Image (cartoon, rainbow, N blue to C red):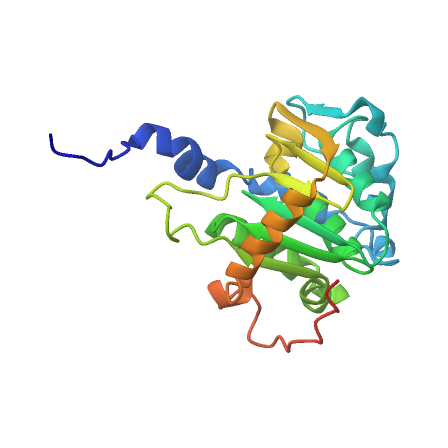
Length: 257
């Protein structure tokens, strides 16, 4: 009897669920998504926020429920439009509760939501924010557009100094043609948010989504840190050399915890 190695057959239709349709459509309609950024009052930039009304997102949320959901609705024009018990409010609250000088560890399949980007950048001011993200031109393009539209408030320097973002290597040993960074966990030293929720405007407004609150385990922290180390050299500006404009001069990176 001849020993054989099983070859897993990942069909094209299955792959589209994670690498085709999502990658193309997950970031949302341009006009609806960017309406918010076009209408941030200039007086709102400050206190460590691109839009200081984001500071209110951690209100109107009760973490004791431990489950947070969204159903399709019109796109938010202002942070106050976000419903109570919404996943992005849970994200804001968990970040707010994390102590200064602690580390925020985030796995992202997609990252394009101005609300999430503002939250992560703000909390990077007194915490270490580390993100491992799926390689995705659309997400990278959205982050670039976000920073470009806020260039008047030194967005490139602020983002570089406060957010450490590395791109997952989906070609490493053990990966298949359709492997992806599909994990969607946000972890402080105490709290872990996990669920279907992507950090995108579509997830925030247009989808049915769910997120649950659990306690972060040491195993989860160790697993993230081990993967993070393997991605040294895969910082977003290295994998996507045009991420920052040619005129950008690298500021001093903030201290890691």
